[in-house]
Image (cartoon, rainbow, N blue to C red; front, side):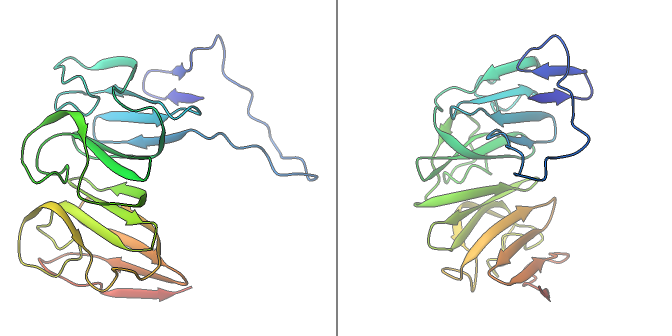
Length: 219
């Protein structure tokens, strides 16, 4: 169940909120929902147990697959998706993983399809065998099943980790030094990206253009 704090509404619809337990049984761990929730700047998306994806909020750039100027005040089904397992959202765009492929929709230049065209239908970046995806404000990164990582979108502060002097990558580019390095998790921020590699956490603070991974914390 998802609740929007700003509106005080629940999804799926219900007459009253579910009671939140004060403690968990000690005999077995609690059963967690399969749903995945992601928040963009002005929209939200959630994966249901059956793999379908619903979204609400702004659809100005097609990030909810309808490209309507009016905000979606109730969840709508994102078109063309039926088996999503991961989802993320940025400023005006949504990316997800379905059948080992990353698919993105919304504002142009951050979809990884090699163009700056706005899309209201999901497109597939050049990234195969993807297992996870993460979105920053204006960039996204995909993790492959082999532990590699590729990123695309805005790179004005070096957040793509490609060690190249440019402001944007329209196609996925492998992160320098981590092509098959066992990356197991990644997270994107406004102008930075962090990754977890086996037993080490590496952070690209990306305060200046082209800056490399500059902090390492051994766990």
